[in-house]
Image (tube, rainbow, N blue to C red; front, top):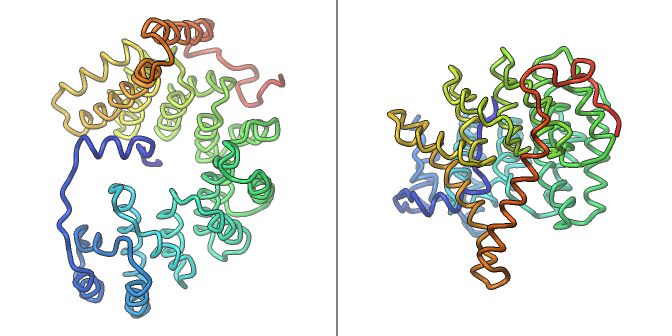
Length: 372
């Protein structure tokens, strides 16, 4: 199951709950890389953040002496640290490691660059997707290209780049490439809202392979088309925890108010990942019922669930507060902002009123989408 990543709120949440990292000398970090120490120290690895050109040369000289297994472990640890700590910047290291001889290192480096917006990186990822000999690297490249496709769709990157990425992803999806590579390509191309992508998602959902079906449900949420709401809602009742997990995540992305009662039930799911996804989605969907459920978990004895619920509640409060920003900058009165919120919610509730959950939601078993 994929990990829930609060990427959009990472900065906000870290300001609320800062953690201390001990400053460490760069040379000490280099000595640490060469040591036989099995554990990985975040504070020592953090000293490799934001290296200059001279430091990168020293790092590269030592890196080339390390065994492949150690390089892979270190790269994974750096990627995880960069994900957890907003002030950690290993981008120069990751860009250097894109050409490492070890496939695990290359794949981990791509994952570590997930926030990079440099168009030159997109070109490298397209090249890796088309020609890297390792399937796990091609899968990582397909996943990483989703970020650039979204940038192109939101006009923060050239449209031509988006077209090139779409072409590359479609070629993989229609090929006989490794199943994981095709799954990641489907998940990335899901950012596009066209008929071809709808058919791709529907075809993946019709697969006999459970992992491909899970990819389809993930793609439904990323696609953000209300058309997928009912299919995702049905999978909240799947006996397969992987599908329940992806469905719980997808309905949050789709902001499907009608499934809040089922998400509250899934908070108690025996599978921890499903429970965590349900909590996160409650924060995305919002509403009084979702808020009450999150507060109850925060006040409960499960510290892990309480932390995730707090993150979800922060997300909910952040979304609610954005509507009031217009008041703060003088563009709307408070009454107008609140009225706009209420009208938006009424529209959402009206659209969801016809949801007959959880059964009989789909025509033809839900395997093929109806044409508009």
